[in-house]
Length: 431
Image (cartoon, rainbow, N blue to C red; front, side, top):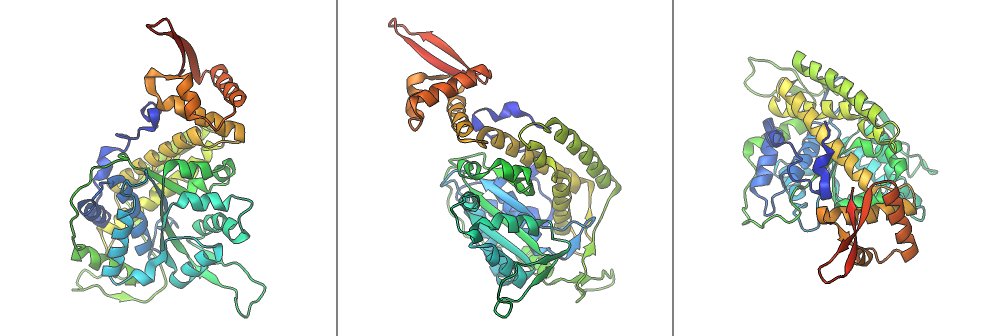
């Protein structure tokens, strides 16, 4: 359940539930290795990347209730905070396991056709995108070329096609660009960006049409982590073996008498089961999802961010289960609870940041910017001269109009403060 009082001044420290740092199985091993080798500690971002990585590795091999392991995860952190470490670790893992070219799609989206080509060649594919906020911004810019503006539409369509057939974009010349279809495309994305870049790029229509709801956000709790000594550590061999075995696996018939992994080449997913306790948790979470959507029904389309919450939780639980048992994965109660808590955290953070940053118009965009300056000033408030300096891009009349609107809506309050030298200062405070 969301506790929005913790979001004061956009300080996310302590928001990530402590027990979520205890991750079972191979996903936990990936995060542990990333944490141990990081010069700048970003454990929450490492968790997001590890889920996307493992989701790509097991892609098209397993399913739960028709759901696959395709994940779109966005890691938010300030510049220079160490966001790139987990991406380098993921690449090293795939290279060391000998499966880099089989799974790695790239580090940028040049066009919708490029995405389709990468997934067509690999079927299951991992993209790791730096500054994904800029890509989203370009895709919503009416001045951008059509192939760039089609990227978000392609990502949205491919996300929902993971258990079916995806038809690639058709071209005028079928000889040079024949029609292509992708059976069960499994696209996993881990993108990083600074928060303000992302949410300046997000539009209300992207919330309403479900694109943002297809993504899960993880937020760094430390914008300026202390630099640690670099440690060159090779990935654990048992982890590399697990990644390689999953990548090569088609369908495994489990034989308790077998002395080695024996696989047969059948293009069929393994239908993973869940314990009674896990199923009960998913059912309860579905009902909780409905209640949260009803609460947000008339609040700027924010209910759409909860629409896929149950689906996200089941996918993450599936990923955890496969990382715990290669031969006979089963979603446990603990897997389901971890996944539900992770998804709840992610959506609550997203809702808060969207509420604070995404605007419906230029006026609202400026209003939110002024409100954030006052919010960041804390309980002591901010004097009007300092506020004016921090919002210089606004015309004085526009700034005054915004301040009046914020006071009338009781988002802020103004107060004249009498100083010791008989001067006075007008200050603004968050209500």
